[in-house]
Image (cartoon, rainbow over the protein chains, first blue to last red):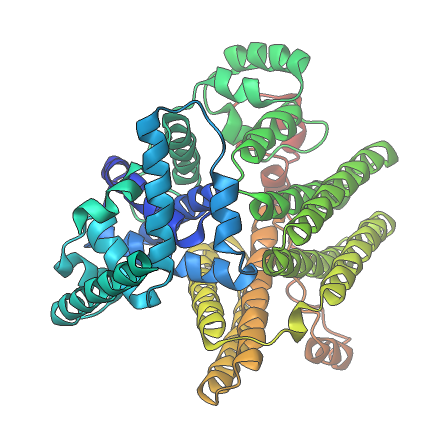
Length: 167
Length: 371
C-alpha cells in the first residue's frame, strides 16, 4: 500500500499534468485547480479505506475525468470565445509569451472543433505526453483502439487546420 | 504534431498554487489516516501557522502560552471539549479555524459550517444530558449554531448565484439529512434524559427550524425537476455507491463503540439506502435517467443520515432508542417491561463524555471521577 511520502511523490510527478489536462477541459483556472486537488484527495481517500492503486497515473486521470463530467453537469456551457477573452489579461509579458498565448488560443479553438473522443486522446498524447498504453489504461480501452483513435484524431485535426487556412 | 501542441504545454501550476494545493492535501491526509496501519505520526504543521489563520490575534497570544504549557497533542485533546472546559476556546478558535482555512471551495466550506453548527448541538446535548446546560451556555451555543447555519446558507446562495445549482442542491441535501438525523437524536436523548426535556426541546426546535429552512431552499431551486442525462445518472450512481460502501465500512469499524441497538438502527438505515439504490439501478436500466438520478441522490442522503446518526451516538455515548413506528407500537404492547436500550449511562461513560481522554489535567477531571 502507498505511504504518505509515496503519495506526495505522485503529487510531485502528476499535479502539473493533471492540472493542465483539466484546464483544457474546463477552461477555468480556479476550477481546474479545485478539481485537480479533489482528484488527489479522492485517491487518498481510496487508499485510506485499505484499497490499492497499482497505476496511480491512470487512477488519477480517471478520477479527474469523472470530476470533470460531474462539473459539466452543474454548469452551463459558456462560449469559448468568452473564456479565451476573459483569460487573456493584458500583461507585461515578452513578445515571445504574447505570441505563445495567441498560438495557444488558436490551438484551443481548433481543438474545440474536433470530436470529443479525438480531442481527449490528442490532449493525453501530445500535451500530457502519455504513451498509447497509458492512455488505454486511463480510458479503459485496448491499446489497439487507442492507436487507431489517435491516428484518426490526427487526421481530423489536419483536415480542420487545412479548412482553417483555406478560409 | 508535437510542435502544434507546444503552446499548450506552457501552462503550469504556479509555485504558490502548488504549495497551497500540497498543504490542503497534507491536512486531508492527516485527517484520514491509512486503515490498518500503525498510527501515522501527523504531519507536523507548525503551531505558528495555525495561529496566523485565527481571526483573534489577542487570543492567539493566549493560545501560544497554553500550547507551551500543555505540550503536544493539544489540538487532538481539544476535540472533546465542551463549553466550560479549559480547551474549549482552542477547539472553536484554532482547530475549527484551521479547518475552515483549508476548505476546498464554497461547497466544502458550506458543509463544514454546517458541521460546526452540529458540533455546537452536540456540545449542548452533552451538557443537557449531564444536567450542566445552563441558560447562559445555551444562549451562547444557540448563537454560534445560528451563525454557522447562516454562513452555510450564504455560501449555498453564492453557489447558486455562480450557476452551481447542482452543488448547492447537493450540499443542501447533505445538510438537511444531517439536521434531520440530529432532530431524531435529540428526541432520543430526551427519552433517556427526561429531566433535560425542556432544554432538549429548545435545541430540537432550533434544528427543526433550520432543517425546514434548508428544505424550502431546495424546493425553491427546483433541482429535482430537471431532466437528467445518462451520464449524470451514472455519475450520481457512482457517488451513491461510494457513499454506501463508506457508510458500511464505518458501521463495521465502529460497531463495538456503541450498543447493539444503535448499530442495528444504523444498519437498518443503511439497508433502506441500499434499497433506494437498487430502485435507482432499475430506473437506470429502464432508461428513466431522471428518476434514476433522483433515487441515487436519495440513497446518498439516506446513507449519509445513517453515518451521521451513528457518529453522533459514538460521540455522545448515549444509547439510541428506536423511534420507528414499529418500535413505538412494540413499546406500547410491552409497556409493562422496561425498554432495554435506554438507561445505561454509567458514571464511567459520564467520565468519557466529560473528556476523560484529555491529556492535560483540568478541573473537570476531578468532577468526572464520580464514583
